[in-house]
Image 1 (cartoon, rainbow, N blue to C red):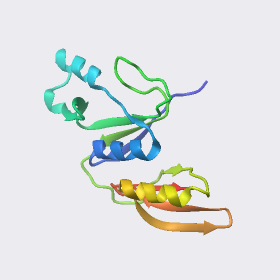
Image 2: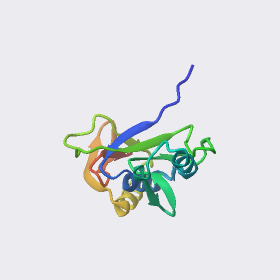
Image 3: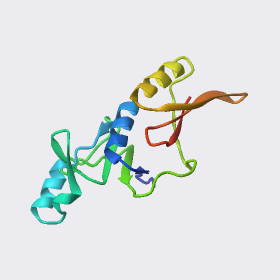
Length: 149
């Protein structure tokens, strides 16, 4: 038996993080507006729990990005495959991540990919060259570490 999963990432600004990671990975920001309209219509969520994003309603405190080839629920916009969910938390990031993403560009594209990610708002922390491999450690706009290999 296999399990479905999503990686949940704490965030100060979930929509900015989703935009960065969607662009970085070639993913799509999920459109939950139909679900939100349904929930607002039956009084299940208050108007204050939503914000306008890109001309449609979104949840204020969480948003996900999904792989464009993976299935999703048409009624809710929720992905059923590879997803990252960003949720608003009140406290700032204070320590090194215990979990991080590795983005695989390959040695021939690594520097080009690092440059592209810097253009999106990432910052290079260090370049690593070890007998086991070479990679670049970056942080996203909120300081979450990730590697480009």
